[in-house]
Image (cartoon, rainbow, N blue to C red; front, side, top):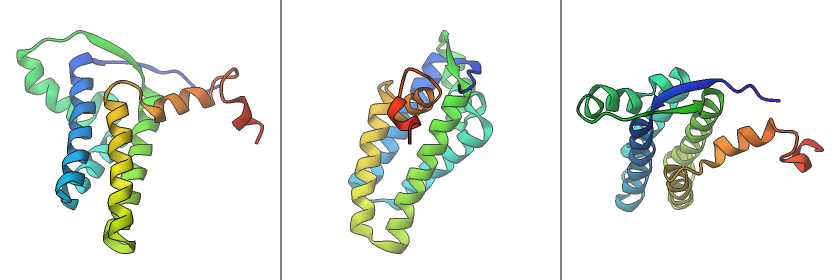
Length: 147
């Protein structure tokens, strides 16, 4: 069973983080600008390293917009969020590796898939977070655990 470690973050700040990442990935794909994807990689990497409470976009929101617009807090699983940010970092790195070193056409196709995944995540159905929780639950993903 995976550990559930509750952490409280601003609901609006967390939404801001999700939407911003999705928008940046889409902008990178639409305009085929790799440095935006590199920025996303850095944001996700620092979010994974610093954990969700100190994630760059959460802190940015907290000290700017959050000072003006108050929001109630949301309880998240810190471990699931760290796993999700790590998975996002890895997927972004794979996209960047393809774009810079392997095949740019395949790289942009991967960025499109990444953008779709980040959009799904932005609307609150984070596949990586669900996978983390699923892997730690005895009633879920039983077929994967048998492997």
